[in-house]
Image 1: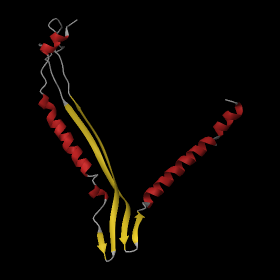
Image 2 (image 1 turned 120 degrees about the horizontal axis):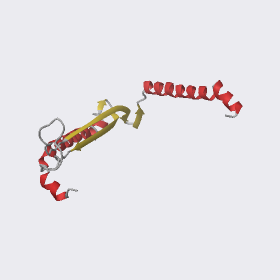
Image 3 (image 1 turned 180 degrees about the vertical axis):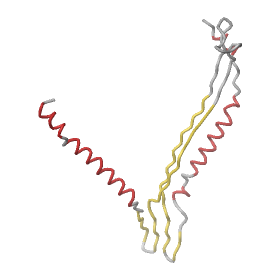
Image 4 (image 1 turned 180 degrees about the horizontal axis):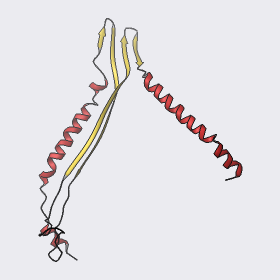
Length: 161
């Protein structure tokens, strides 16, 4: 068995600066994404009309995922065979990479109305979302009911299976 010290002396040295561009990109992207969730994005510019002031509000959702990986490697030891289809042993190597993604989503949720009579919060109702959710729920209920009332299932229950 090869000693760890033998591997270490043949392994390529990793330059710590290799990770910096990827990490800088991640930091910059995270900063941009998190800026979208600032209070300025949640509460819009107040609109004044006479005695009324209207302030739009929104829900802001941010999702992020990133990863950075680096490799390593070791060529075959002196007593090992060279790599197939090659005249030379595999070279010691290194690798690196990273990736990520994210999404921001915002939607209006309410309007704050400030008047001499007081402050009122008027919710914004998204009728389309309510309709889609209702249709989806009804579809699942119908599928479940059809499964419960299916003739094959009833026959199996009567036979005691």
